[in-house]
Image: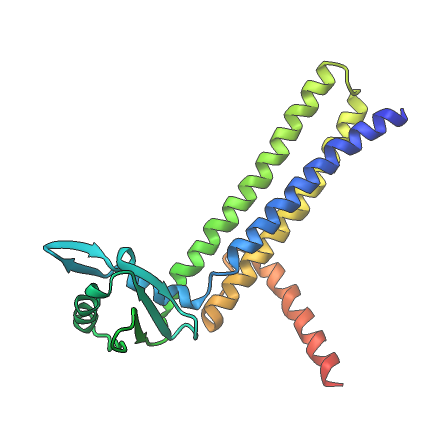
Length: 221
């Protein structure tokens, strides 16, 4: 039975580890997403007429915001395109500037609108759903492996049942964790415009706010 116990632990532990890897990848994917993305997305829609062909600005250079979300910096691949880009940006209502000989164009932009931020938050929602899908796939694949192992008598029904129970427990725990991570990221992006999308987010937000209040009270003592 000791050997069978190890088999059971092997299936559930492997599933748990794979789920944790998916969550870490999800967290890392959220790091670059912020309010600056909203302004950068605006530049992704701008097109420049180059030799009679309309080309996307993002194909002519990199769009970045190293000094903050309101200070966009464009690194243009071909300096010859800079005058065309400057002209188009002015037509779009921006006030671009570039030093002579530099391949950079700098543009100050207004704070992103609620609609722009909502678009960025939607990206977080998509990534959240994708991560939950990955967790579900791990759960499903492990269940199939357990079924085959049982059919081939590598493990007994009791061991497989215990392993499945553990995996369901891990899935429920990590699914909620992923939703909370995504919710907190949306809250960071939307600020005063954030509101929970469903009852679970409301419940999670309530706990987060209570925790923040306790921490603030402790720091003020």
